[in-house]
Length: 186
Image (cartoon, rainbow, N blue to C red; front, side, top):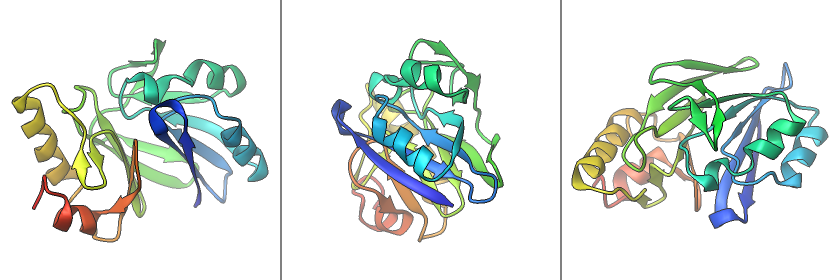
């Protein structure tokens, strides 16, 4: 698996590229802005961007979609069928998402937003703003906060300890670290 992490200036958001070494197909997880480093990474690794996965529809995760899609013919997936003012394919809980020979699974992680989704790939999970290293994403009411914590417990913290957690902002973590040290779950 080919992996790239990009810290974008817009709200210091993270964007990630995952590529299949066999087919050279690649996915981009969240796109706050179209950053030339992403384009250079794709070219350097001879990757074809086929998929964009949007964890939730906030501008600091979708702001670069228009420019990105002007350059790449990629299918965009989101939790509600539109993101960044663009129509997307709906990715629902339990859906399989393929990036070449890499198989991923979509899980719902609502709370920060109603349509929040995360993507589980072999050895890693992309959580957007649902789960951060040592925290969780903000919610607007106690019901959403409780729902967010519950779905993270069910869908993310049940993964193997060594799975990497790649978040929408801030540093990455692991399932073991978040399960044992994140104050929202201990």
